[in-house]
Amino acid sequence: GINRRDLLISTGFTAAGLILHQPTTQAMAAEETAPVVVLGANGFLGGDVVRSLLKKGVVTRAAARTKDFEIAKDTEGIKLASVAYADVTRPDTLENLLRGAGTVVFAEDY
Image 1: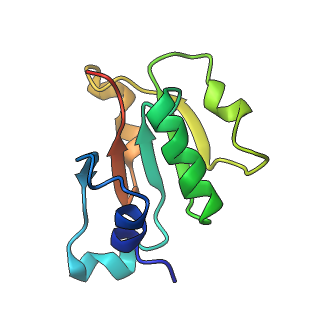
Image 2: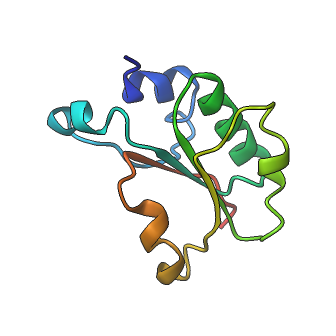
C-alpha cells in the first residue's frame, strides 16, 4: 500500500509545512486507508493537493469556507469521498469532517 508519510513528502506538502496531523508509526497501519481531509480545497494550493491525492488513489475529503465547492467540479473525473463546508474558526463545522480522518492538510490562507 501507499505509505501516507512518503506520499505527502513525495508530493512536497511537508516542505510547505501544511500537515497538521501526522500519525505515529504505530497508528500508520490502522490509518493507512483513513481519508485525508484537505482544508482550503477550493483554493489554488488546496485544489492541487486534492487532485494529487486523488490521482494517487487516496480517499480524499475536500473542505472549503465557501459553499460553491469549485473543487468538486475540477477533480479530473475522480470522485471525492466528500465535499463539505468547514471553517477552522468555527469548530462546529469540523467535528464530522475530521471524524475518522488519518491526515489533515491545512491549505487555507489565514
